[in-house]
Length: 236
Image 1 (spheres, rainbow, N blue to C red):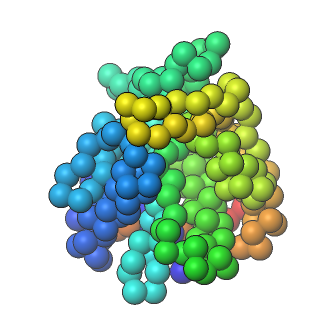
Image 2 (tube, one colour):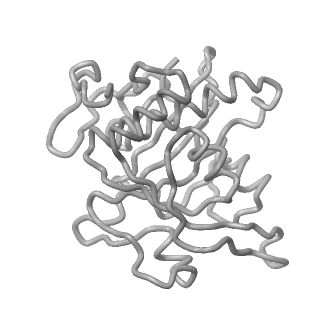
Image 3 (cartoon, rainbow, N blue to C red):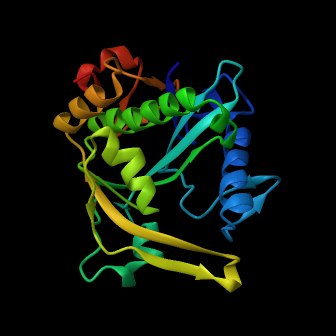
């Protein structure tokens, strides 16, 4: 299988008209029902202010089209925009300038279907491919760093254990509480994008071929992605 990458501009070209609805419904299941986040919900779908035209989405589907995994990347700065979840919500956690720039993206909404708990081998494969897909995309898009706010165990289990080093920007802190229904321990980190990291992830996962499936008509900067096989940059 492969990881589908798309944005809102290319969404109309997708082969599954229900893909976006199902992907955002999985987000609702994770972030509303299990994590008690107080983000907006519409017709069974979770979303927030970072679901914008500049956002890039990664989806790993199962054989029957079900959504097994999901992730999002958003640039932290572009024309008339200089925002990130970290900067807008947790800047007080870091006693330094929040990383920001056109080639610094923020990763968020990383979620794996809870139904995969019954199939740990497939769950591991889905995470492997999502992490690789994100790295492949970042290399092709000339992204230099990815920042994020996550649970410490997610940083470790999802990224560090697969060879993608994370530099922590702050100590772990507890957020939330009685008013939000649940307390979360989070920390902020930054990951370097490089061919060295790609090679290490491939060695750890045992996946040595590109995993990305690019949505038709998706545009990377000023260049249209006509075929992923034409962009050997991600193979490493």
